[in-house]
Amino acid sequence: MNLSNIIEEITNIKQKNIIFILIIILIIINKYSIIDGLFKQIIIVTIVLAIFDVFLKKNLLFENSDEYYTFIINNIISMVLINFLIFFINDNLKKDTFITLFYIAFACLFYELIVFKLFNYNNLCNEKLRDMTKIIMRLSTINILYRYLEQKPYDKYWFNKSFSQLCNFLLFSIVFIH
Image (cartoon, rainbow, N blue to C red; front, side, top):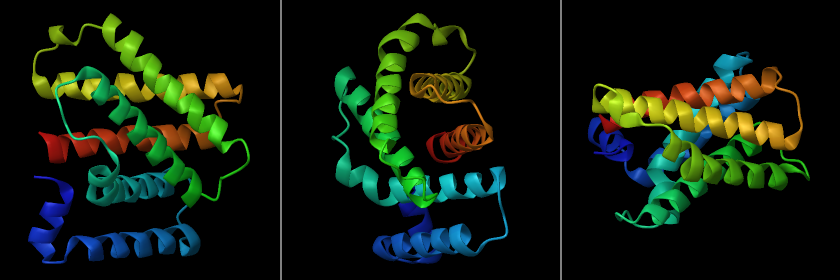
């Protein structure tokens, strides 16, 4: 069961209306909120992940298959879209944003083809811990490598964005996947 089915079952609100409600909440929080910093980023990333799961995921990703490379491409598309939405919402779209998104895509590919193969997740005791460790390793690798490729400092903005993604992906995995 995915997020849209859970929300629709609890609230009896149709999926397209959920998207509108999430976008309105996002605009209100981003433009009129007194909340700032890390907590604001966590809220923004939470809503972006909800929008991605409810609407974009089924429309933009390839169908699930057991093929490894389709899985990698879906992961790259997901990370690039989520980061693009976060940049867009934070009014942080600049002319070098697409270069940053390319670096994020490259960092995803680097993780999937190199780091994932080098780290043995099978020694971890249970499936939930393995999945959480994979998420931590994936997002840490992506966020550190793309910032290094940009040759920009690891500042407060980077930390807030990276940490909020990490928290939300872990929470999403615990609540909706396990």
